[in-house]
Length: 452
Ligand SMILES: [Zn+2]
Image 1 (tube, rainbow, N blue to C red):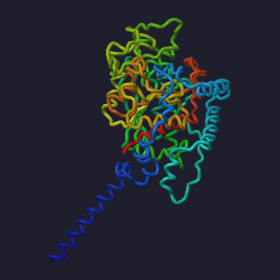
Image 2: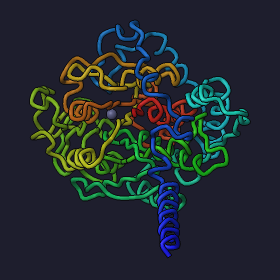
Image 3: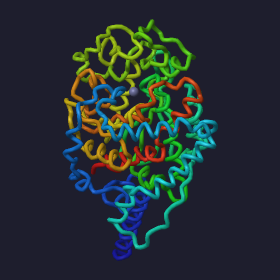
Image 4: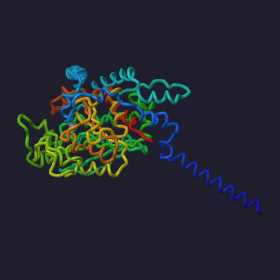
């Protein structure tokens, strides 16, 4: 009898162990844990390799600092300017691409395949270092956008309905929530993309007139999601399946909805807003209170002297630090999560701001900026020196608050100085975002911004 009892106890113990093993195997948190399983190793570089990459001295010693994200012109090297204007003129004359989404998609698609052929994506390098037995065939990639209309000028309503449609199309990958409401009560809608444990934050549209940044980020979401469910799982050479199993991205594509509506003529500012001479609604950057949200965050806010103490199209930092509901919502979002890094998408300059005098280099930020320069041809801005240029900025506040990378990505060449007020100009601008390369910016940041 004793032997039988022992046998029963032994059998029970074995069953229990089996149960635990199955639970761990099926749990995505364990499956995707960024601690050395094969999936992760194939896609992510080891932290030491990424961290020890150094930034060449020459790019550090670039010419005088570009202080305002809207005016990086003076600090860009001549060659980059020339390249920019070339790109701009060829894009601007391409009325075919502007005329329909299909045409643009085709152009983007062919550009993407050229880029895939010529560039060396990060993930293929990583795969090489963890060499699989048989190299897989290069995946055929096509433009995937079916829901997001990045050609027509977005509105608050169109963005809301596209977000809902994306969540419906990709229920296992995209979830929708709200981080708060704007001054005029519009929803600050957030979508989360991915199922991983690593968290990062990406926003667009904080400046009212920069509708192109909103379209761009929405387009990214759809392309990444489509790549995730595709056979190859890849986009621009990056394995989106692996990346989105490791990461969850917290995305606010329209962080200043009132501003977008005001510039689009569908809403009025809540207060009387001052303009500079010769300015009009196309220069409007603020929220409904005429506050430039990217000067409203509590980083050296007291020290910012924009020579403007009332609601203004672009210069007003607000009556107090974090006075605006949009600012507060974004801060609360960061507080509620453990973001490894964040980036804010803006328009004009084809450049990346990653460093300021208060926090010159934070974590992986130098590596991330350098890779954006080397691989995607972004101009790497020098350290912002003047408080008027970087004080109160979302990304600058994030660096200070969390000691982690906060980057500002500026799309489009400098030549595009006019805010797109019509669908036609918006479509031309959308094609000028160098989509074939810039669509890889976020996966590149996921890759190089990852730390164990
Ligand atoms: Zn901006």
